[in-house]
Amino acid sequence: MHPHAFKHGLTEAEIRFAWVNYVRMRARMVSGDVEIVAVGVTRQGVVAEMVGVRVRNGVLVFHASAPPTAKVLRELGMLKRR
Image (cartoon, rainbow, N blue to C red):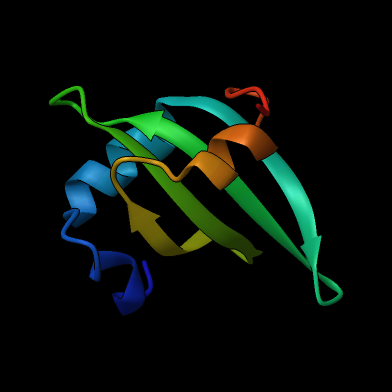
């Protein structure tokens, strides 16, 4: 877990649980790199957005926040455009 992932107040346990218990997840290209964006639910039922990159032994999550932004919800097809 990258230290920046904790910037918005989620704990490592909350982020790990939400990542494993994702509702939607997809890969996206950003400046030539592949990122994985996901929305998941913590053990306490908090809906969180997370962004990470694949590394040798899994995924390095570098962003996590709750609640998810409308932009991420739209990107994952969870919110319709007005």
